[in-house]
Image (cartoon, rainbow, N blue to C red):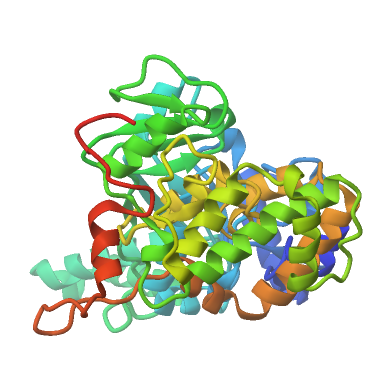
Length: 453
């Protein structure tokens, strides 16, 4: 994993805690939440305040996430909103933390100027002993305060102010006034500068969890389902439960809920170029395992090497090649069915609120596309990376550092973004006959939504 760390592809973009004042605040918050402290003089933290160095020091990578539920967090600065989330147990956790910080950025900026903010992502479940309990995680409430209880004291002061204003003899209640002055020394003037955090409850409908070897829970779609990475759980309150081997059923689920679209159908990008890149990724996995020297090879070099080893290429390679031929040259119409190895490689998530989760699922279904796996499902990428040949590791790290890390936002937009939105009059952009045909039947042939594949 050293290559990944050196290139900033693992533990990258963390916030460096080096100032003694920040270290002291972190220790106060850590003691407040866990009863533990760190002896480190500097360390790095993610968006939740988790530090891999402190995890190593304590021998506990879950010191802020006991049992994998109700994740605790420590905020030293609002800049943590730009950091990743490590040791992910729920796909929604980072987004909830980021939205919480952004909605309350002004208040949190003021609070973290003098203290750390410690809190927890709270739900009604404290122990996920069975998969069925995952369906109780419908709402996540964010609870937070400084280590000195500034918010709690501010709420108390606001109540006293209301008493002072509402009671007929409030002006003459010396005990009440003294209490207000004492609390105001900690909170400031809450009548002019209210200290209150907003939007602290978040919905959690569809999500991925690392629990039970990985589950994708889709409950807020027209046709709910659970997709298991390994073993299908039983006794779940959804009509459909699948595992990754049931590719036809997964394809039907995605199609029925209109969660995916073909890459070659995407507007504003060169779909054929993206598919060519995917073909290159497929070839790399084979060439590396065969011991072929791929170090420093250009795309054209890799294409020639792939041609020499055509008989060894993955089955998905030819399906993607057929799509590229059709897209670029108007070749024979490729009828790629859902049981074809190329099927999921040819898709990306449609423009829905569940886009990130669907792209995460597609990444796990297409693990040879190491770029999408890294972008959309880092936990699975790191797991698979450990077993790759050294040549493949070196090539993948070099590619990601050169082609992705240099412009992350641009790469994500090109691969997963959506454009071609209707104009102000509501009219969609003009489409070619080929585009209209794609809209009707997709690149794999006509689909009958009323039947399984």
